[in-house]
Image (tube, rainbow over all chains, first blue to last red; front, top):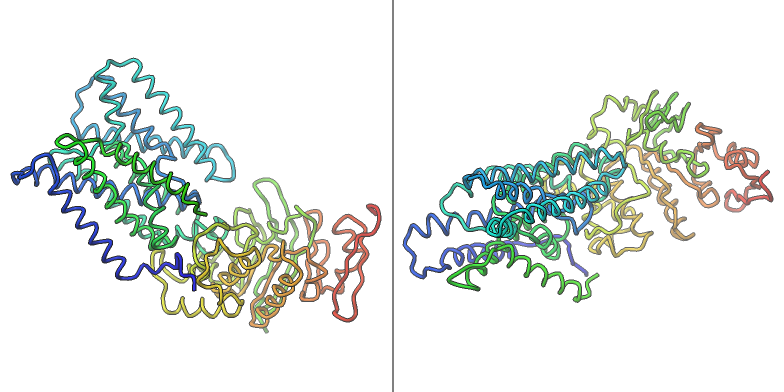
Length: 319
Length: 262
């Protein structure tokens, strides 16, 4: 009997999966430029960095799940809604202005920019008056991404070399932190978003079949979609604002997890959360190992890994 | 005396200012099959959506199992009425069993796992509809006919009193079409009222207890099939001259276009 995607991950799968995450976390803590680090390096640099990575992975992967359910498209990601563009333009503007903004202020502004761009995309999609909210959202998101990218280029064109470098570096994504302010800041919106989404995984299943069927089964389609969209925007927006646009997590993780647990979002969402954590932690550890004692931005490692992954997927001849 | 599964009186259905249907009166008792016939674009789908309030403005009296549908919460309505539209996502990588289990949504919280009762009822529905042997197959890999049966099983798993079907037989071949309608007949035997829009008068006409013929935004004729499936009525409904006669052996109506646009 064909049991593919039968949605029975089983106890063993969960245990192995959680074990991988714990192992990767430990590996991340013991890896770095300093081989026998003093305890403050662990407590104030590596541990907050680990927590930041865990939050980032879970937030981006779950946010991707939500967008894929709402837009009924397995290729949708949080960035489809212009989240990185909004955060990028805001961060770029702050950098170019030369204002000395503290790290946490930068995080707040980036998050605000990301959420603002989602709000604009959403208003555009609703205001277009087209019946199909999904395709309007994608269209408006693509527009936002293009406008945002050209605006960012404009900012870079008019800025000096050092500031331009700073913008470029910001767009690459970076998990490096000193102290706990960033991970603690990020924990609040991410935990909130994850709870809201987790309570709606059954609804996401219904939405993925079709709006009319979901409606007839008692789902308040419009309001549930709005709540889910807002949660996805909060998850991805706060993450991008904090660590910069780390790509591919929201796309790649749900995609891989589908092959393990199937497409039932009640299983896919928790699996993706754990998978996202694992992927980001591994990529971050790799980014510190590859060019040790220096380090690469995690965004670059993720993009290379993601690009390779999708090339393999394409050539693997999957249906 | 049965409480009718569906009563509509003086109902108008509109999209914004555009009135699509008006003056709808119908009373459908449990265990009856009502066919909804009419030309393309006349509002058969809108008729079905009006009962759910699905994107359609509905005025007039709509009673579902004797209760005004405006007094029911969305979840309460979902426990009484299930609806199978023409369009649903065909590419889901869910198993057949998972698809059928999703019909249980009104009976559980948004994140809850499937209960023992959900599993039992979904299993019975799959056996009833004849898709039990497909339960571990992926939905996306099924044929068009099999997908419709699975969606029907999910609709039944919702345990409705009233089943709304929007052209469930479209694109099915004779064998599957016949099986579909025999299945509907069996379901109606369990006391479910079925309102179904269809073009398949020839195959399906004999399974209908009641026919509603829509034309020009209103109900042009209604009643038992013998009264509605006449050359005069059907020609007027579809705006083309039709020859209609009854085949004695099976009791089917044969409908054949005449010449010209009479």
